[in-house]
Image (tube, rainbow, N blue to C red; front, side, top):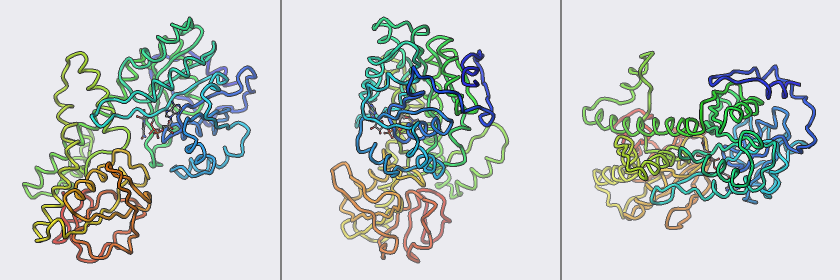
Length: 450
Ligand SMILES: NC(=O)c1ccc[n+]([C@@H]2O[C@H](COP(=O)([O-])OP(=O)(O)OC[C@H]3O[C@@H](n4cnc5c(N)ncnc54)[C@H](O)[C@@H]3O)[C@@H](O)[C@H]2O)c1
């Protein structure tokens, strides 16, 4: 029974690769545990994770406090990759797939994985309410023999604070009665080229035994794992990955402005630099960063450092630059309108794409929302086209509905914010004035980059 063999193997603190195709999924069910895995939080990350475990032959309990989300999942509505959509269809009719809003049921699962949101509030302060709530519920239900694993992005020491300490306070011995681990999620929503199974997972255990058990569980569907020495190494790994991206995106936005002032196309420079086979990672300039990761995660690190009076000036500067990007985009729109002699109050601007990145419907932290709000405050009439996002709600509660590409008409300016694969650029009106915040359209008399 390979499942047991995996559990018994001793993983060294290094990368371990398993051949998922050769795995035997037919291990008999452990009757003491009605579910092999419970996933708490079935969002952009938790749902594909639950589907991946189910596809690997495990009995899965998906738990989410949001009944609407559960109803969406049951009706097959969530925003998923084609491959995950197929998995959801087959899970829907499987006896090994259950959904519930009752968190107390996690005590029936051998492994409990917590994947709830870790956003920041309007002041960029980490909002740990969901993670605290889910961790407290999971700890309260913990039974000997379980593995509890956090996968939500958070500060270094979070798993120890929210899970290890409270378990010990309950009298459960971590590493003996209950195993605890942290493994950051690296899923890239809507990108088929990196499947969930193919992206290596970093794992840190509260003890060596905890790490080994967590590696064995993840290897049920992931091809490669990398066991590190502690929970904190794993937690900081995720923060390094996303602060690295934040700093580089802020820098390449700055570099785009440098190129613009020298009248050199920034994309040509990046493409050329990317031919270097070592020492250079290409990042692309754009309207800013959105989604649940890059605008939020670095603030978990900065928040933690503040308590210790430790500064991280490069990261602080990068986050400040990124947060000002939507203001810059809005001011460029107004500049181009002014250049054309159009007053803000007489202008109509159409935004192409409001999702935070191509091919998703996710508008969390999308810079488009702030750009639109700023333009509306200045008196500009703003409409948008986004086949993935039928409507948006702005901070002042105004709701806007997507118009059809056929209805763009003759606006004063078109702002290209996000380019979904399905959007046909030929549907843009001929000779319309375009501001391209994606830096992907050819520059011309009609089309300007930011
Ligand atoms: N979205 C990404 O691309 C991405 C990538 C890597 C890592 N992450 C990290 O993964 C975590 C989850 O992100 P997401 O994008 O999937 O979030 P999400 O908002 O899409 O989904 C989270 C789900 O958790 C549910 N939830 C909230 N509180 C709960 C509770 N107490 N008990 C049970 N369910 C609860 C919500 O109803 C929601 O359905 C975050 O920490 C995020 O930083 C996200």
